[in-house]
Image (cartoon, rainbow, N blue to C red; front, side, top):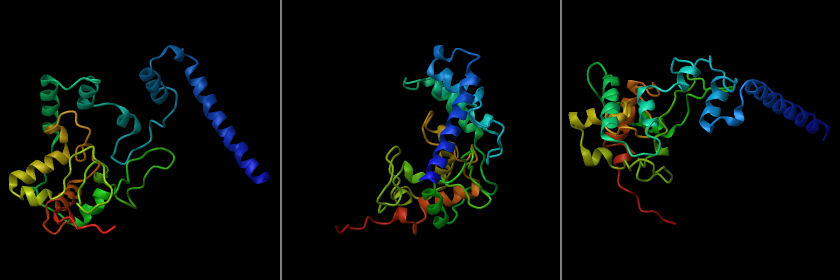
Length: 232
């Protein structure tokens, strides 16, 4: 009991110290009059809520990661409004300009590696326990938004189902080009989408994208297999 009480005391002290730091940091401004957005930005960028000079695995800093680029600013400005034609055209143009194609053309990689990448949500966290990419590569976390393998028992529904993707679409040059560009920067086709810009933001390398594409297109991939009858 004494040991647990000692740990609890230290934990509460740490929380009090943190809150005290925040309180002192915002005391120079009347944060009670700030909007929620202004207060959030104040706590992140001015009050020491984040270690802003910490290096990120994609080669920038936390400050740069928290700073919106042109596409993010254009989409954020919409608020809850439906995207208009001018914004869509502007975002689409910025996205298409960002796409970098692999030397030698777009090719399919290893679907087994692509499956692992699609199922992994590891990577790109910052803070007191940021991810070490030298020991484990980051993933795409694709199944969090899409059904891929038709026999997968759990998947997200924010994005459309990609089951039988290669089987129904084929592997023409145009189709491979389209899939690559959507993964690299989906705003090139779907302005202000929620889908991450895997290539542009260096979440996935060109090689990793080729593996994810193989998972989508390869005839041997589970994505392109028949749905197995379930026995309950």
